[in-house]
Length: 184
Image (cartoon, rainbow, N blue to C red; front, side, top):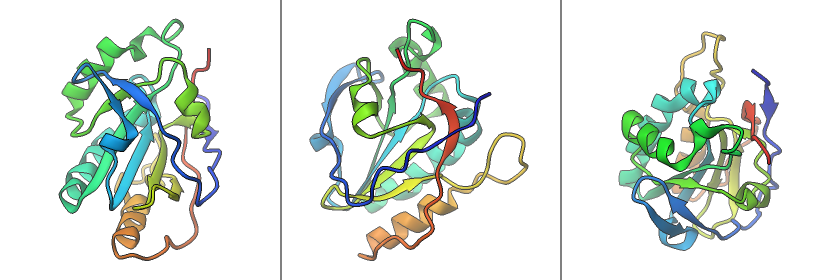
């Protein structure tokens, strides 16, 4: 499995707008209707990546802890489904239901959204503040397949807590690491 780091979108970047197909509810969803006036988490994931599978439960726990606090969550799969059919919308729906994603799982067929966010890997995490400016980008925590570190979500939890308290996210922000996005 190739280890690809995040590109680290510049802090302060305004979240690029999008409208994507939600594989779970089978409707088009746009960023404006899915975002929050407190904080918005956007995750680039996919079904087959061992890095994503390693943190799936941690992602669900993070969302369940912060959704009640007004934080919005959404996941996007941008992989080429011709060469990686396991990442297609039908199987995205199955995966979301199996894992219990409490957030939309969106399909970026054109890969334009991944490019707009400079996403490089799965998982790749972004947190936008109330003004939809990038306040955090990087890792969930330092757990990786095979490194025996627990999945806690500590890096993103710290960032979300600081954003919800009206503070700037304190450094350092470390890149996420995962499988490269499967470009067409």
